[in-house]
Image: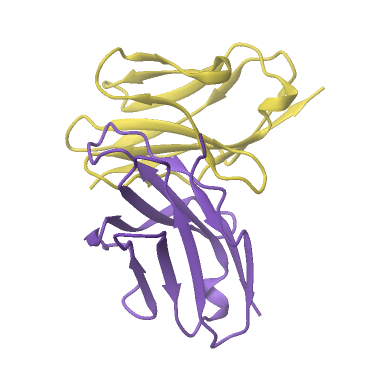
Length: 111
Length: 115
């Protein structure tokens, strides 16, 4: 069975600092991986997805993630945080149809 | 270019009442998924439907919950005899196809409060 683990339910960074949100997956075969962002009282918006093409995936709003099979990781990064990045971020995995989500990481950005 | 639409956005029910949540997928999408988000938790898959068919309901509670996606009209998630534990945000997503790589596009959710 597939699963994802997001380390750190809360991450705080200063504006302009590096953002690193961690996601590790568990799957018997190479999975497809997604990062979604959720702003307060809104639905989820896709940031980026890995579908077995390039291991470094670039998404919207300056985010990117690297698929590392040896580490079973798919960490999300952004070189310089903006105040508008404050939100909840979810990593998800799928092999078939349904998405399996992690428990989320709430990102706070301080001025 | 309307996205996934859900209504109502907020729904308040008393214990024992029925809740009906509606989801209209993006234009051209025939695959609908329902997820539930409990407070301070991630989203949990409930059910996957195509037009007139339930494809995967492995995440649906065995009792009181049902879902449909008729040939015409929105997908409906129905909760009978609601209990306080049903209070959650319910999200609908749609995709153009059933491949694992197809992006699921999410609606804004329906926040159900059971008094």
